[in-house]
Length: 538
Image (cartoon, rainbow, N blue to C red):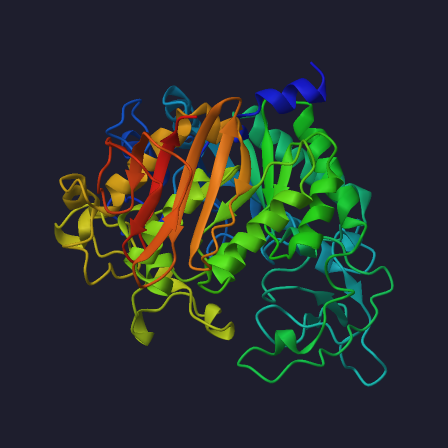
């Protein structure tokens, strides 16, 4: 089977992806921490084959590897094992089997930039300068005055170099000192990490999310990064430099193409890469892979101002940048960013959900987003993300336990959860919202099921419309003679817009109004933050 045929068949062209933070999804053994069995127990909620479930097509698991959990799994001490807190490989195999029974694909987090200091590779590497694994990490002598080799900074603040007294050399860590960077210029490292991908694909994994992909390759001369002339001071000094030499190197594109080639040897695999980039830089990552089996995340909907014109322009520009085999994606939130309802409120979040599921490409949903979960303020003595405090914000607030019902601990666990549950869980939970046809979870279900069963939304083109109204964003999804019109009012005020269509069927609205009715939309009046999805007859 050639690459072109694989591209046409790939599951990524249909699936809505649901990100699960395993520690916080469902605890099955009452230790207060979510686990793999808990995920298995809730698979029917995600997709039981009927419209009573969310209709999710893939789950992405944040790291479940063996780890000392300094950064909650992003510091890996064993790439081919499951940490006991989550279960074991047998449970993982059962999860894959049960997910596949429900037509749910499984995506693993692939943390390739760094390991834990507890990984056997690093223990060998630091033992002596002549150890065979010394060059598996990036070591450098101090400057004559004993200071670090260059001015590179850690994402978490401070120098990206830590002096190891065993050999009196510095090792590089783009993140925490407990997360030493692998040397991706070493062919043995490349081969070892390729084996990691193969290990999980042979266990049935369908795809990967590549963590910190933009950091993989560093400048071979380790030159100083230039100062950022626009930096005005912040809690974290990371942005005081422009990271020209410590990330985003051109050679990283070759590494990404290697990943894609490995995926291409297996049927129906896919990879997305974490990198917070503008459109030109995203385009480079798309072009790195020739077989259409990879995409960089598009995180821009998280950070763009609430402005219909700006959002429309971004999507138009993004679409224009893509080649035939490129598959777009959109994200509203994740484990590192405040929850969408906390950022913009529920009405706006409903509007963005309609945008997310009607655009061309792959939508990502962060667990709890579908019920409108919010960040919570966690007392300092209960905070777990101690290193997140070195960033702009502590990240515990978006990682709290899933709110399943109004029982103790929101139905997440019978034991005290590792993080507190949201204060409003008795009102915002799955069980209660499933009984309310106007709830957020019903909006998500309607949109997801309609998208999954719509050839137009899955395969049709995208074209935005000029309405002469900067507060309303409207676009057509078209396939042959079929048209779906999406109308989104970004204003806090009522807005009226005009279209040359009659006898249109209302498929979905953000507030449930007029769904299933046949209406003329020569003139449509939208209430504040209201959105419509309608089928247009021409």
